[in-house]
Image (cartoon, rainbow, N blue to C red):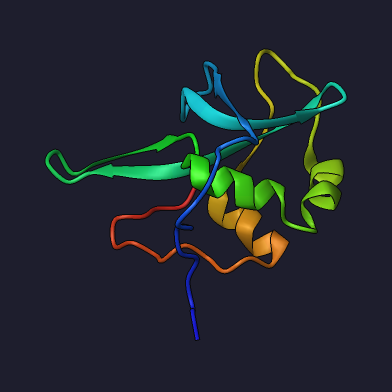
Length: 114
């Protein structure tokens, strides 16, 4: 039985858009937007050379599967909001995947919480 989410062999990267902003914790995210509302999703990254972590946009192969999840539209309607000072409501990929009932990404030793 598969415990964690695995990268698919084939993907298109059609859903979600790369969004640049001046958020205090990140400057890029994946933005899902519909009807003037948006939901920003971030994923933590790690550089093994410098041991630095940062928040960034989702992997494109993951963005599609999240958007196509049967529960995504309800989640979006509940949490998406209009832009305020160039920012949208933000969630981490782990929060979103848990809420959608998706298998989680494998937890890495270096991960922190947002």
